[in-house]
Amino acid sequence: MKNFVVKTIANAGALAVAVWLLDKITLTGDSTGRKIGTLLLVALVFGLVNSLVKPIVKVLTFPLFILTLGLFTLIVNALMLLLTSWACDQLGLSFHVDGFWTAVVGGLIISVVSWALNVILPDGD
Image (cartoon, rainbow, N blue to C red; front, side, top):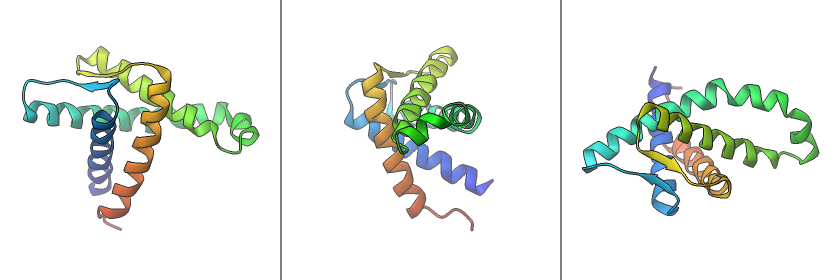
C-alpha cells in the first residue's frame, strides 16, 4: 500500500512538472488546493492506465520495440498520456493534453521526473 501511495505522489509530481513546462498540457482549478486534488486524481487515473492498458499495448507492439531498439516506448507513453487526458475528460477532471507531439514531450518529461522521484522517495523496501 505504501508503494502505491509513493508511486501516486511521484506521478502527481511528474504530471505537475509537465503541466508547468508545457503550455499545451493544462490543469485548471479555482484554487491551489483544488488543483492539487485534481492533480492527485489525474495521477490515480494515469497510474491505472499505465498498470492496466500499457502492458497490453507493449505486448501487441513488441515487434516495434525490437525494430526501434526501444524508442517506440516514447510513442506508447504518449498514447498513455492521451488516454489519460481522454479519461479525465470523461470523469470531469480538468486535465487536457493538446496534441500528439505535446503528449510525446510530456510523456518524456513525466518518465524522467517520475523515475527521479521514485529514486528519491522511500518505497518501503
